[in-house]
Length: 333
Image (cartoon, rainbow, N blue to C red; front, side, top):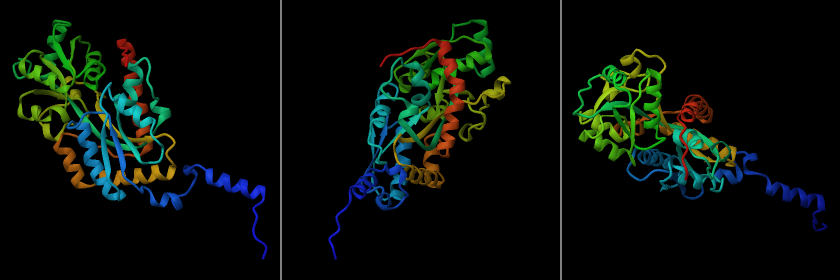
């Protein structure tokens, strides 16, 4: 038998096959072993907060299903852009995951003049994970008892009532501005560097009003250290069942605001890996233990795959982009 000598055509086909993108391969062969080593999960927030906690709860359950450790890597700063940029530039091999939220993919691209990443071009969605409800609230020393009283007082004295937020362009800031536009009032914005100092000054009576998220302020709301006036999403919250929604309290319709969190990977990550991650994520979010741990920190599970993520982003952009532009806010990294 003559020894085999590949022709130039055979050799070329071999090279092309070896260079074929992983996304074109079925879930078999090289991808069958995915993941074959630990996975990192980038979180653009510091340890201990709601975003970090959600990532750790989901990562623990997802790790068990993938058969590999998932290591949380906190990269806070610049409204999540530091972590997002690191995720966007990571190798698209399914070994880098990242948390994004409304701020990362909707607010930040409009707020900042220049970004080192493009959320549409650089990220590929795996699925939605959670939503963080927001609550209109006042400090314990305030004489305001209802959302309607707040509106009446604000109309009688435009710009005289202060409200606190964790910072310019935060979901809390934009939610309050949207509410003000909806009901025709003007409040004075007092931005802080984070939720903790904002809440502390509301409790101390330095600032009267705030939009409080249930992850950072749930215990304050439940204990009465901050008095809830109305919840900002369409349905009442189980932990605050006696608190009306903004729609109920102010006789509105269609006011439905919350922050969502989602899982993404670098854009060129192969189809089969994204499908595997999406399927496993949805299974994790149905797990009762995971749901219970989220509920304990004031966060609601929010299932849905890549299509649901795309729809959520599209719908939110229709609301928030015009509002941000009308406020004339521009920030620099």
